[in-house]
Amino acid sequence: MTSLRDDLRVAIEGARDAALAAGDLRLPEGVTLPPVAIERPARPEHGDYASNAAMQLAPLVRDAPMRIAETLRHHMPPAAGVAEVSVAAPGFVNLHLDPAWVASQVAAIREAGTAFGQVRVAKPKRINVEFVSANPTGPLTVGNARGAFVGDLLCRVLEGVGHEVTREYYFNDFGTQVHNLGRSVLARRDGEPVPEDGYQGDYVADLAAAVPDEVWAAATAADADAGWVLGRWASEQVRAGIEASLARLGAHFDVWKGESSLHDEGWVARAVEQLRAAGQMYEDEGATWFRSTAYGDDKDRVVFRSNAQPTYFASDIGYLAEKFSRGFDELVYLWGADHHGTVARLHNAAEAMGHDRDAVQVILIAWVRFVRGGVVDSMSKRTGEFVSLDDLLAEIGADAARWFFGSRAVSTGIDFDIELAKQQSAENPVYYVQYAHARCASIQRIAAERGLAPDAGEAGTLLQHPAEQALIRRLLALPEVVGDAAERRETHELTAYCLEVARLFSQFYRDCRVLPEGPDEVPMSQARLALTDATRQVLSNALGLLGISAPESM
Image 1 (tube, rainbow, N blue to C red):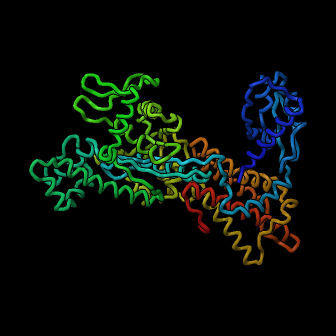
Image 2 (spheres, rainbow, N blue to C red; image 1 turned 30 degrees about the vertical axis):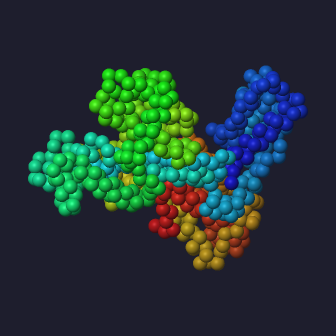
Image 3 (cartoon, rainbow, N blue to C red; image 1 turned 90 degrees about the vertical axis):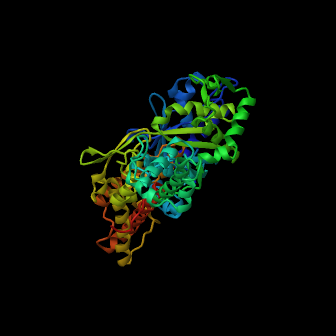
């Protein structure tokens, strides 16, 4: 399936190419044509879609944008749904859709069913998306769980346009934090105070009470480092708990990758040797450095410290090598905003290893604050004062949690209002959208009880009311919204789209009587029932991409 906007872009490109072939537009030799852009005008009188192609061409063909726009209009090939092509200053080509054609698309939406909105990119990729990746030193909190919502939604959208996606969770079972967790478990087990740099939560006491005899024996054996033995065991228990929490959210992972495996399987060593062979590693003051400045960084980066201990960056390099070895075309990392300093060195390492730096994308996720009664709750794992994802899901459910985390741009911070998320009223946006879907289903049930069925056969002539037209035009935009979300790697416009569809349906239902009051109204009623069913289908598809349920009744 292609979007209407893509079809209109092809039509504008056809007009441009025809004008060039006819000699009505002349390009200098060797000039590359810019891509044609299609947008929605802010004012309805300017059409349903508009293109600035004439203004893009003006400096190339050395002519006035208005004259170029007229030339494009003259050469515009017939395009499905377009009733009129007009020109507006300073050189826009405006496209006006035929209301009868718009109304006829109700049947097309219903026929597409669950596939409506699933556009296909020209060149599907194999994409690895690594998200959440919180350290397994405590239960998943609301703060670091934002990455779960964002990552899962992004994966759904990428798959919706045809990419092959692998969902991956990377957990640190190798560093100092894991050792500190083990020392904390040891202290709780022995009834001693938790170390200052340890973890204080009640979950640590639960872990201490659950240590198997064989693990305790290994931890207390002669010459054993109890912190590492207990830390490795405890981090795996926490990781399993995180996996269960994410399953309750509806997020699953195809791969769980431990940092230790990158060292144990030799990926770090091989990546370092590859960079050394390329002349991108050197020794200084006993440490091993990567020449990151050769790729624009402000300083070189330590890979192995002077005591031969690897840095986190060493694991990052090994992980790049390991991921690319699996044949991925693109690697997407979703990290907290506090990791901004790591982005450049990751791109630089990828380039130094012979990969396209643009094949590595890092999306930084802004902060989230959990607010209850105007008070911000702490989310520190180390002190044990945090709001867990399980607590949140138990209180408001996965649907509300998904909506509120998915309703803002990734780079925008969130004050999560728990009381609003619990409301069952129009004030709560997810409730409002789900209620619109349930109302659509309810109308269909009532109609069926009266012996009425949707019929879009005459929709092209019947569905001409402004509220009907506005609703159908917005329904037709779902493929565009999904395509934009996948291309921009930014998905919050999906929730905004759902809200708008729900609002337009409410206006349609208010202004247009759906169920008939007499036999003469049956044809119109059947057409409006078809539109109601198309709205239900679009809301169901969009909510499905969000991972939110579409209830049949509320």
